[in-house]
Image (cartoon, rainbow, N blue to C red; front, top):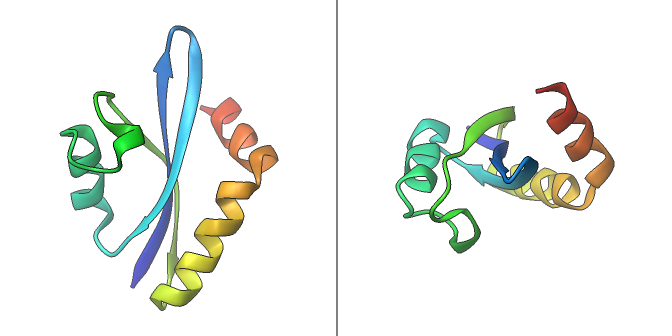
Length: 81
């Protein structure tokens, strides 16, 4: 199982998001919040806003790419928070 996830954080009254994929979503979120994740996520406290489960890595990577490019969906998810 793989997960595609969307993280959000607030910086100066602005909500920013990060999209990724992982096998263990809880462990990955912990890494992001401990500044050991992607360079973009370092130094910030992230909250899990969205995730979806996939059967294999290739499918998860394809969906991650689509979500990264789909700013309308990302903004819709951010507004719902």
